[in-house]
Image 1 (tube, rainbow, N blue to C red):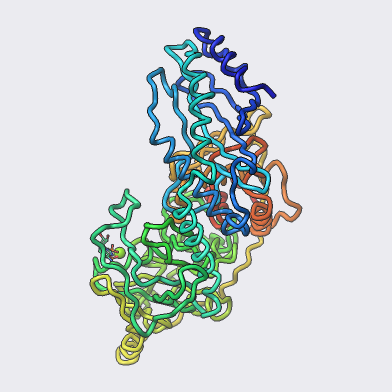
Image 2 (cartoon, rainbow, N blue to C red):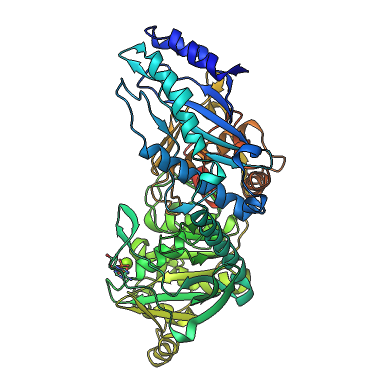
Length: 565
Ligand code: ADP
Ligand code: MG
């Protein structure tokens, strides 16, 4: 290990040399308060910045062990440290230079609190992973600026990350909020709930592209008959609306806040930062958003509970397509969620295929069942709950046929929820829909697909395929793009990076049991014990935690996926 004074000297000696000469600084350096590791050096001033880590021993960092004493606090603290570091980097002045010269950046988090490979904490040390843009003037090394960046500015940033320097009250509040939300999610089942929306929560966002809370929003207020109470470990007594297990409809006129409530429930699988408005909106961790997704591929799935007797005797017990229709894609999304043991399905009429949702009495009379391959969800939704315990929450402003199968009906009126279950059930009796139940095939949750990752699509000339991620839209694996733009519970591009790494990992170290669901469960349980870092031998700084459903979603949308029975 080299001393930091030697590093400064070395950098000044590189001044004026060609940029490639920077390669010689990939090493570990000893500073009085920390160790700096330069893990990857960029090839030119415009390339992806160089990656470094700082490791601060706990004797210097000074974090009290209670602040990371359990998994929940540890994740919260690591997320907080990431944001703190991000904020410090935003406050600094960057000198001029070519390309990314002088940059210091950490992967930027959104409003969800998540496990990230940006920051780590243990009894021994605090570790931060970030990027620096090694300074250049044109294609020549600016050695003086580099010495200042690495040997003056980084130590200054590190100083700001020591426990005594942090805003400890904010930190405590942050960790407490996160721990309370985790606690609430765990408590849901004790009250037979699948979701909880606290009174006072702010659900709408500023705009479709801005995740900040809408300032002028009407705060959430629970209807008395659905009100539940929790006594949280930190926040104390909290009231709000509990959504019970079973089948729940969210109804109401257009523009009265139905989709906004469902969106908050979709993202209630994650915890949110203080000030977000959704800190205490929590949904069952295994809730999955279902939608129609025309054009996606489907690989070897048993769709027969929803689709049968296709024209030309096409089989649907092992269904393949490279271009699914609206109804087929939505059926595939349901079957795939069940394969991974989803416990709650979340559906918004705005993004469904109508023919998969309903077939009313008049249509049943006109088009006989043997001429209609589709069994609508309305006929499978109760067996799904009664036989498999899978609840559903549906936004349904347009069809009252669902009243008959609902356990709870919530009406939104000017963003205020009301419990209208009794009225809806009375209406169902007064105006019977006269539908004939069409479920011929019982719905199961097991699929017998076996995962086989073809090396040809994951390797290129004997080396692992190159991975790229385009925001939340897609993962590029080698030459194949995986379109994830309709997978709505992904919130950060770091999750896509983690998922891509998990696919490569599955290929390199295949699990012993190759059943599709079992293989995915196995890798997720490994990640929960060993952490996200296991996914790569390189100390990646931009992986963000994801669920088994989203990993499966990526594999299921991968056109190179091969499976055997
Ligand atoms: P729906 O699905 O019932 O048609 P949306 O959920 O799309 O309605 O909401 C319609 C509009 O109302 C959106 O612009 C949304 O941001 C806004 N909105 C939703 N909830 C609230 C609220 N609690 N306070 C203020 N505005 C809201
Ligand atoms: Mg809507």
